[in-house]
Image 1 (cartoon, rainbow, N blue to C red):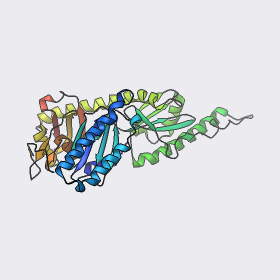
Image 2: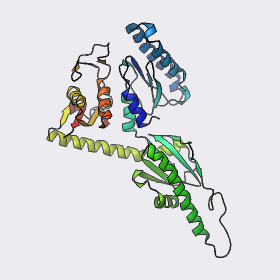
Image 3: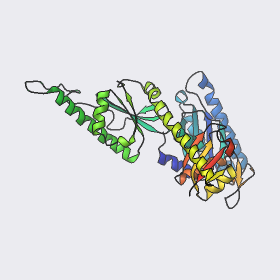
Image 4: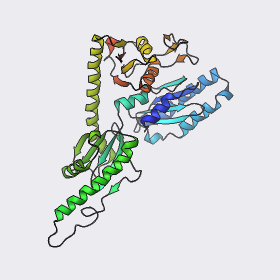
Length: 360
């Protein structure tokens, strides 16, 4: 999974030619048996275009990086989509947990809209499972990957955990257990703080009611917690947990998209909006877009004029030719800190599939 900073670095890349392979893949057999053939066909299409537009020696590094990426694909562990990014100095593979439209793109920048879409529709988050053993998961949609960097997983080695509770007259075993439990969960929260400082993410906390209550008393991350899942899930598999925690995020994402539509209506009334790709492009170029709303399957190729502020008919070749001008708009808006929300086809028909709320 990419971090937000890694995504920004990917978006900032500019070097012609840069190749992006976006492929529909499958998680299970027998559907995934054709994935290698389809991906290699997309790669061949990109290489053929490179050899048509350049001398072979001028793109040998790009071709080599692309071919090496294909060799490293673990076909038995693909998700719903796959993105390969290659230039002469860069090579990156990204799994995508949602269906994509397969395509091969040669451009000055990488076609990152599908990765951006992942970060908007499927916000990265963490899942903390409390128990005698505390596990931490990095998550996208219903895909959970256990975080095994030190100190996780954490073991409760004290009394009430791996050690026996003390006995004897006058000893309140329950009080000792509770005290050790609070101390342990405080150490868990301290370990979480190290990760949260460098990469703050929303958090779902999972555990029996007793453990949830103890953690709530000691945590410094209440503002990051977006939901709780009650129950004993110490031994639940990542796939089982993923199915349980995903609805929490889907509900939150739906609310955010709905709120953005309400804000767009207000912006239209106040004449602070742009609609249609041509208008949105001009607003994005000058940094006026606060919030971008776009239908998830909207793609449009175009050329850019010399000044860079106007879209022209697509000519296929050259650095001025954008295989997807919508992707370029998304990148520009995000680079300046704007928000991007994606919608189903038809949701933005009145705005010609793309709209922007402008800064005041």
